[in-house]
Length: 189
Image 1 (cartoon, rainbow, N blue to C red):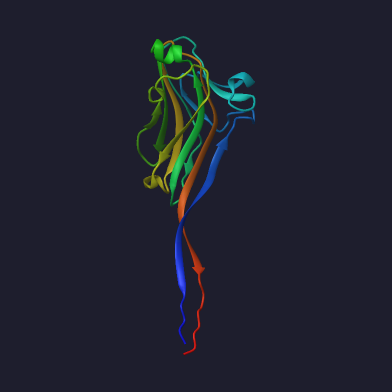
Image 2: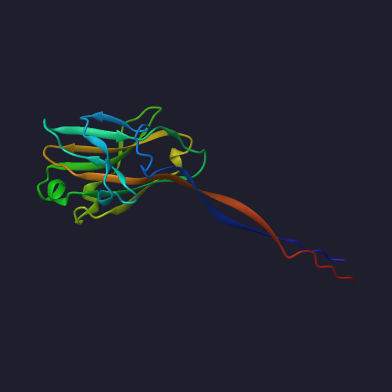
């Protein structure tokens, strides 16, 4: 009698959401503002990616501004690659043509480290002012297990109108799934 057993291993990706904030709760209590206090929850469906609310950076004298709006802290899972996604809209005129400000998205390891720029409005190239754009930045597995925060950072002299909406933190793991194929083939000789 002969027996054959076939084992196939396949790699699959599992995606999971860690956090979403569409701002529709009507508050930003989980966010921290540093520097000049030019960030606010903006209630205007025409300046929101979805729903009625978005985060708005707006100018108010005195200048210059160096301000961040920062997420709460997240401890990332022990394995995986991470994606931070958000939608943004801004004034091309003030931020690019007149070059009166710079917008950044940053991450920090809360156990020591400095803010690391993930994205800058300069990375967007030419864009249409006040159109909504989705942006995703990836953090590799070296961030696994770390406690992090994300920030939207504006450095400006006389720039205004920058909007953020629909932020999400997610991760992907590659899981090894074992599947048994075939079976037993019996032959009597």
